[in-house]
Image 1: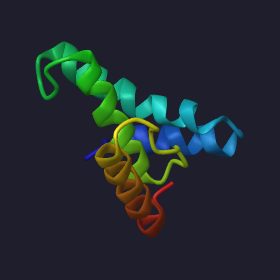
Image 2: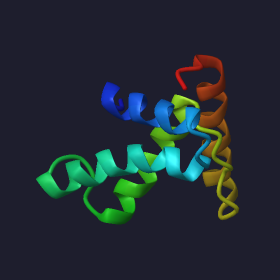
Image 3: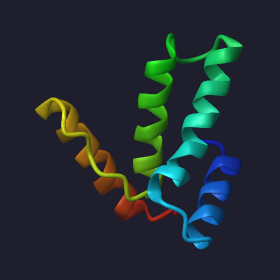
Length: 88
């Protein structure tokens, strides 16, 4: 679950008209901080993936990755959750 500060900063970036990837960077930043503290993700790559997933669930309009079909399906599901929740 993303911290309220990350959601607040992402909303501010959206109001300023920044790109979705810039908005998502707030969630990735939060996960990288947890990684550096030794909590949560085991690698930087995993921290980025978790951050992007949280961003989609918070309502950031990130496109699903074009990689593996199962990964794309999960990302699309996260995006649907974000649209219905409407936090951002």
